[in-house]
Image 1 (cartoon, one colour):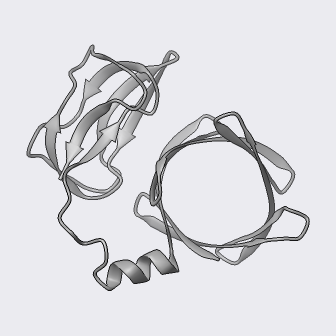
Image 2 (cartoon, rainbow, N blue to C red):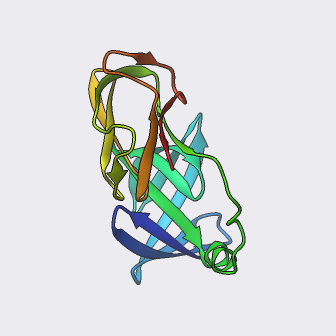
Length: 166
């Protein structure tokens, strides 16, 4: 199956085929790699060409946040089918605001936007400190900031709503 993975402004086509052995053949921009993954608690242990990477995912498709090898990021992952459905006008019904949520419990260090601000894909929104590390949360797509629900110094739980985007 073909997936389209958007990391910031870059989109990468990824072809995935499950092999009879239970492993996966993955082609990223035409380069084939062997991939195997197993669930370990709330994360995945992924072996990519013999290298093991612990992968923690948060969110629900198509928009996911991830932590892999100490790197945090966000991705939008779509299939050809979800793109086709969207182009036919499905899922275009009016919906409420979308929320940026805390990926884990922590303390808000800085809020980088204000209500009414326009933000582009990848724009930094808020910095949260967790486990003595500062993590910058970014916009998954261009939007307008609705409500900012936190201030610097606030302590939040994992999954807490921080900022609404319209």
